[in-house]
Length: 437
Ligand SMILES: Cc1ncc(COP(=O)(O)O)c(C=O)c1O
Image 1 (cartoon, rainbow, N blue to C red):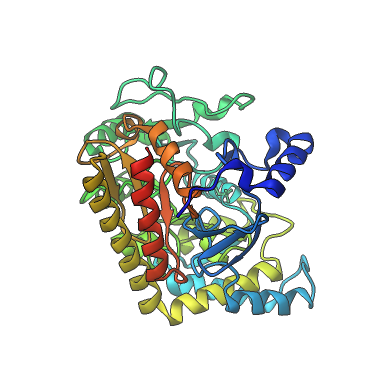
Image 2 (cartoon, rainbow, N blue to C red):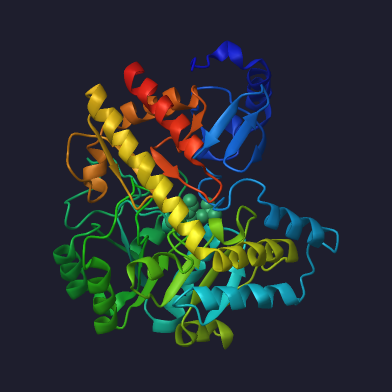
């Protein structure tokens, strides 16, 4: 396998030149900045993407997670094509949103009542508002390194510079961008992930003011970090003790770890959960789901929730198609993703060892992370920040140039569409990439 080089991308390079003139920074999302090659996609099918210069990639990005059934899964294409001919959006009630909500309620343990949105960032903040309305309290406790969307109130203490981040057990509230409204930070308490002692101390001090504890139950925006054994159960118990609403941000884990998301996978039920990404298999749909008691403030109209595109019929058709497939094929889909992911993880470990490269591979398989570190475990953001992030970016570039597309920060997503041949191709590329580093 020869590594692709810049001269192999004549059409992509010309698109990049045009993009730099009309798209700010040449991209539509900061997550796409700084790519090592001008890869412009032409089309996707199953587990593969093809770029405009004709190169093929085994895709482990999957649209940053949504494509749990792969690109252009027939069930989704059929449902969306049929629906779009019947109208794109009604701004009125229709049957598909009832079907979709019933499927969410059937699959997700916490879901008694559901509201749909379009993207994860708005649903995440919607859940915070619901928790505030329900409790009458103002603060939200979030964990350092956890991501709940790009909007102002949530974009604090994601990946703060260590010199600003404060003590490990009482992290400072650190803004994430220029231009951010700082007042949101006054309503946040930041805790370190996987540290029950630190969390308990923070709650002893702040519990009267805290409306919600929000977390990524499997942390996927700072490596891929599982909750320590018993941690989610302990957070659940603390929320019960103090009357705090527990929110799982399942934008990545929802319908990916299991049909019922991380709450099914880990066996801990939150009061509210937020979904996006995989819920509609790649069409923009998000949702807030929760107990009838907490969602009652929306049902009863004391807390407002709205959106022009909420439950649009095209998104709902994709949601019904995706969730029906996941429900009816749950055994094949999840064991397939887990076993191929496990095979890939083990293969990467073996190749790293043979090449003498210090790599830690961790995650449940449906999603996992490659870290460049000699440490045996990464437990929180501070550990993650000590890994060799520049080497990880180089690894991403080496893989991309060999037809393997992973999330630049080292995250790999599997889908029902991946095959053993994809895994073998990826492992050949990994072996060559380690040699090239
Ligand atoms: C855990 C989590 N929450 C919220 C979001 C925001 O979702 P969106 O990008 O759809 O606004 C993301 C996006 O990656 C996410 O990973």
